[in-house]
Amino acid sequence: MIQTNLPQSKVQFIENRAEGLHAYMLDLEELTGVTTVLKQVLFYDKYNGISEDVLRRAAARGTAIHEAVQDWLMEQPHIPNPDCVEFEPEADRALKALQHYWQGSELSAMVQPDCVEYLVSNEQDIASKVDVVFRHKSGEKNAYVLADIKTTSEFDEEYLSWQLSIYADFFRQQTGQQVSMLIAMWYNRSRGAWQVIQVKDKGHDAVQSLIDDWRKGLQREPTKVETQYPAPVIELGQMYRDTENEIKRLTAERDEFRKGLMGLMKENGIKSVELEGFRATYIEPTERRTFDVKKLTAAHPELEAEINDFYKTSQVSETIKITV
Image (cartoon, rainbow, N blue to C red; front, side, top):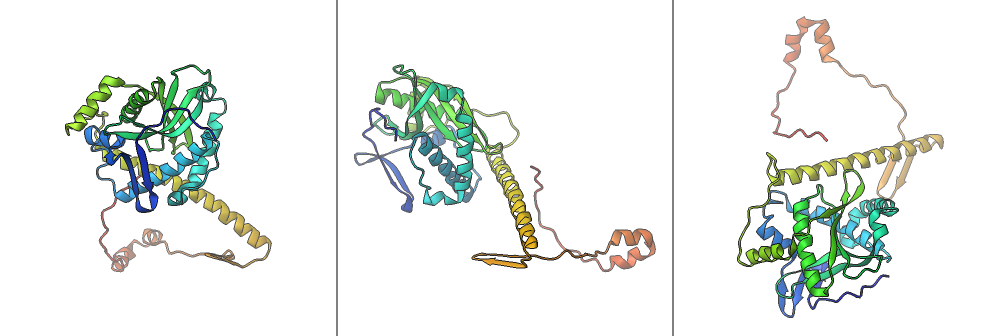
């Protein structure tokens, strides 16, 4: 297991997953996380209109992938998070994709992991954890790289630039070391591939100005991406796209299982298989007959009026057509 020599903050992180509790505490005072600061000042409408259940599932998926990747980077056994078991297969695929990407990548040649979940704070009112801290293999002093693991549908560069800039500012104050680069390790779920993206460090003055606005309870006009759609529509649409692509992948995998099982049952003369929570029955090929009303009325137009009397009219609820 890799261990860091970086100084540790006085802030304590308290977590009780069973009770949904996680808090940054400095003595008896609870501090605010960086994501909350950003949400209150700049990105207050980012997830408006998206249900809590959708956000909860996205967070659980992200946690599963984060923890699998962090355990691998730190060369320690991965113990699945019981709250995220549903997403462990996807986390395993994401990790395999990262391992493949990592071989021969520029990042792996340049740096090595120093620690994960490194707690940084201004030791006053804000604290958060950095997903991964890398140090340069060259041994160069004051040369650390801070990374955030992202599993979101789309990569939001402006958001991450602010997030990592705050981390970097606190990191410098806390350690006396410098940060040479801020990066996102983004898992593009729609492609099943990783990208390493460098983002701009906004610097101490910009970070301090943002924190000052937060303390005053001010909201800034967020940087808008040129689009005709509200941000929640984009976010939810992207989540739907990723879910639909995952359903397609799983459906194709299921169909392969069905085909293989049917072949084995036919080959071995097995009519039925019963296991716990599972039953399969082999059905011989049959011939199906259907009635083609359009063909009939085309051949006998005089019957169309009589046939229309047998149609039943019903109301169809509103819906949405989505193409992925």
